[in-house]
Length: 323
Image (cartoon, rainbow, N blue to C red; front, side, top):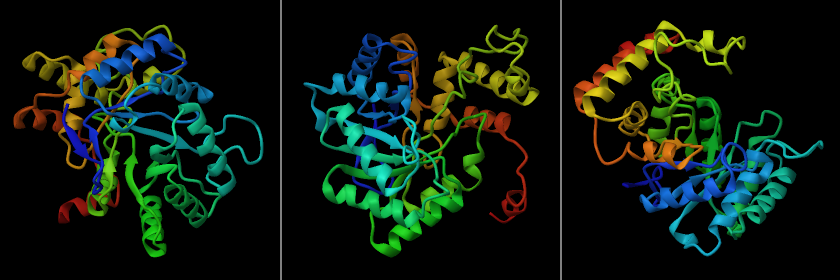
């Protein structure tokens, strides 16, 4: 598996990141450990979790797997914001919560440091100066190596970067946005902003909850768990089927699975460092790992681009004429 630099840092991470959101939930511990073994045997080094996944269980499962392994060969990322318990200071990015949360994560992970510590969402109730100064102390203390953000708007990310630069604090070096063939809004501004600022992009939900994996096809009846929820009608639109049809056609041409084609498209997007792949079984993960080691040709990329293109909203529609 190719190793890529995370943004403008010297840190190298595998081109696929393994997301541990299913650990302790959709995947039991034995399965989770088997998937981690398969991922690292394939050359994967980058593993992402969050303190809130499984209410701490994901970090604990990952921590038990880490014991006895070459810790410095791995890049472990986790996140902070959402609560694991009740209480007025049990969530957010205040100094009190961040300091308590990082120590709790280190304990669950059974490690002395986290390679990448990410703010899970923007905190509208805490001054960004309070959050960034606290994160800077964690890097100075050696508890954290690098800082990242997730679910930030372009303005929020730019403000955080500017404040860190003005104060001489450690900046965010990566962003975790939703980004895939069915959700390309990150291209409106976030991806170019990250490229300009040297921020790596590690997209989550690269298969859009299974819609880009071949799980759903035009003409299918709604699955039992979707009936009556309204979610099927919301997603099963002509725009969605146009993208799914294009993915299936390219998959047939290349002899690859739809999931591999969808991931490969994202791996070839400008500015993307490592899509985050999740799985509930070794077989599902193995399919995802088949996205590396080959490339889509220009014509295939063009067809996928055209099938997934959507009209730009203002002001991006106007600005596109001046690029």
